[in-house]
Image (cartoon, rainbow, N blue to C red):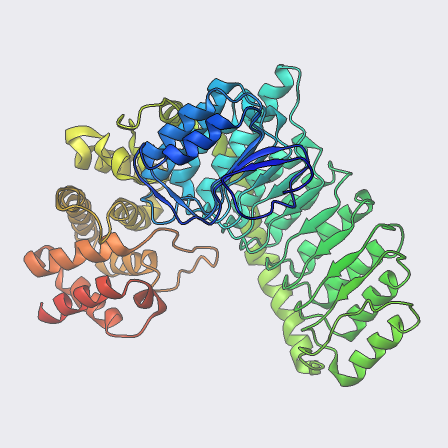
Length: 592
């Protein structure tokens, strides 16, 4: 325990929480909570805590009915402040998580609680799980939020957009209510947000203005997204911790961050490690850090393909920061003599600041440096600028695109575990779930095909990409654990879409293009669009394809079958992820 904090039903210390907090702690119990009866020990502990301020559910697995029981107990706890629910949905189906979250959030809404901290890290939320959060995040319960942790949730671009929209809505509503949201900590690492998700979130960052800690590592963000984030975060002058580790700056992103750095004079930790800063980017950052920034304690710019000249500029700009304790430049390109030069720069300090350089990659050759510069100039000036324009356009469009989802979130927020989620084709494709699929009624195939026709009419040059994407997304509803009626229903619809796609390709005499699109959207063939990455699970499509090939092989054109046979006969990392499905499909293809 910490201070006079009361800890009920827990064994571990909760040292990071403030004193005088009454926390119910079930962390690490490994409980499988399916029914309301399973949740009774937690319910009892909640009821016994007169001034409950927090609930820790980490290391358990929470089902819908158990969440409903816990939510009911939370309804009478207006003192509740901390929802510490990381790693609490292990093994749950993606349809279960939003309902469970809706119950928990609904309980706090009815309690009229004032939430301070929300931690849902290490839960496989995805865009589907985000739906259980959106209505909650927009509610008065969250006007008081200071800390949001959504690390390693698999949000993707869709989930990132939904999160951004919910936070923007929360900020707007809180201002209208006279108690504006003043979020301080925002952690959303390992979520594959990419440029589009980053740009969507940057709108919120600009509007809120109170952020002190922003951590967004490992999100596949390239320089257009970094530019948007840096431009937005300048409106948060109190920023103290900034972590963009393992994204991709290049010199363009570095320049954008460097231009913003003078606005962040309270910074104590900068983590731009593994961000492909390169020498030119390091020079921009060094110049920006050369004056001010007296609160800096830790700077990480390791593994960034920085050579000695850029590193020396960084070292000289940092060596006189009186509070600096860590400067990590490991894994760059200095060579043995260069490493010694850097050590000499910091040698006059009364403390060890420069970290180990044991992973140094050696001084690059002049040919490598020239190749690097040419690569950035040629690919950057054309491809990356086009990417930036494309992403910016999508960022503007995303608000209206998710209006339908907001209505769905309102339905989800109702405390009824057995209620089906109504759906539209647009909402289904944005976040495919069995509930949404069933919500389309008896005309699933025709409704989806009509939507496909509208998409193609708007962009005729993307006809086969549209078919391929819709096929993959609808197929992703099922997997190896799905029940037979669900598999058959989804397969029937995918059959209809495939048939329409094959007929279109045959009519246009472009069957090879459709074959390529299907392979690209399975991740087996590289796309010409360097930004494209499949974000959907492939288990369902592999299973459906195996059934079609086994039972109705004539439904697939011979050229397509031969194409699939060729690609599935070669090793690929995708096959390692879906081993059972792949083996079944390979056997079917070999027999066809």
